[in-house]
Length: 266
Ligand code: NAD
Image (cartoon, rainbow, N blue to C red):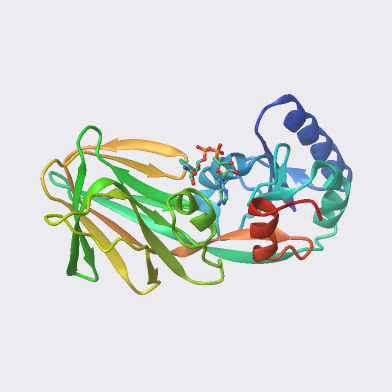
């Protein structure tokens, strides 16, 4: 079995990376940055997001596991002191793989037949670079609303505890094949109207955003920020691909929500 360790590159994460590498090689596992079966991410959720994007072309094989060297993360949920236990379980293959849904974002351009397609583990957001975002929102080809405001956020279930939560969106259990559209400061008055609530869409639905005037947008895909010019439409759907996490012990999603947002003392 092949493995790779992605470090946040701070001193503690690098030290732990060396320890994990030595242990796993002692157990006969092979270091492979090109084609790992297990990717150990050491740092925070951001480190795991980077690892996910590095291996987005190999998601059907790679299983991710995260150790946090800062505060408890959603994806980085192992403590550094648990490293030996973790490494032993990886070497003995004593883990199960759980799969979480992803978001597919397809950006179509006015002057090109080649769309850009991205996979997100947390979310994609759309903002206007300088003016208020004005977008027509279509759900399954039917016009739903004209949005005016700071921006829109489409999140995955596992990303629902990230940016989406800060925007007042619901927390969605990652066993649900869904995506959630959440508003950022919509303008609502007698002239302009949006639904105001987050929308949770099932996997057979699609959401298309079409520019009303300005066709240039800042689009984020997890930690990646990209300026897209001459956009015709942005299409969101639940991706066919899934992300695979190696689970070595039960740590139910709602327990992680509790420990991250309520208290982590018990
Ligand atoms: P980062 O790694 O510093 O992440 C920012 C914070 O989000 C960290 O505390 C991290 O633990 C937390 N986080 C990431 N994914 C999470 C998840 N699925 N559930 C709960 N918490 C999670 O910053 P980055 O590398 O730029 O990461 C990008 C992510 O930051 C984006 O995917 C977005 O979700 C998040 N973000 C949040 C806000 C906000 O809460 N207002 C604003 C912008 C971006």
